[in-house]
Image (cartoon, rainbow, N blue to C red):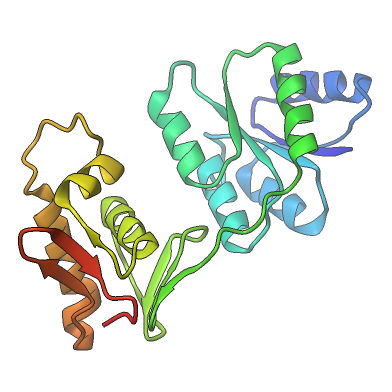
Length: 225
């Protein structure tokens, strides 16, 4: 089994390499995100272990780039100790697992073996409604072939609407799936984001895909409007 370890802390990376080789893995090392991306593109690996903060390119960018290129090699991201948002962003950019520093080598090996058993995951299905297209893996949205930039929250709302296209969904359902059921802010935040989506995906293209169903909620037309 071949592992790529990308970490700019050379002593840590060398120690991980020696330990993994003692466990029977073949290991390649890179100390910058740029070199790590190059190796990942040039070789087939069973697992890639990525640090976050590195010269040249962050681990987030490396992982995001690989996923955009449809490389689904399992990625284990090394995050800062107690870095909750590091962990969230790692998973959001396509990582399969994460481990906080400092970590137990035994746990690292167990996580790697679990990822090897799982293997490369399938590419997420691209969601479509007429000529409206959302690629969850690359986090890209296009209308009639024209790419449209959306914020992370706008993407989350669109993702929920597209997975329920043709159905009426209530404001509470949107809140529960995009925010959470314990959200204590103004529930009209949903209307704000629906308006943002209409301004970016419907009006510039002369469409009316995101519809308000009075007294019930919203519906994304199955044909994309």
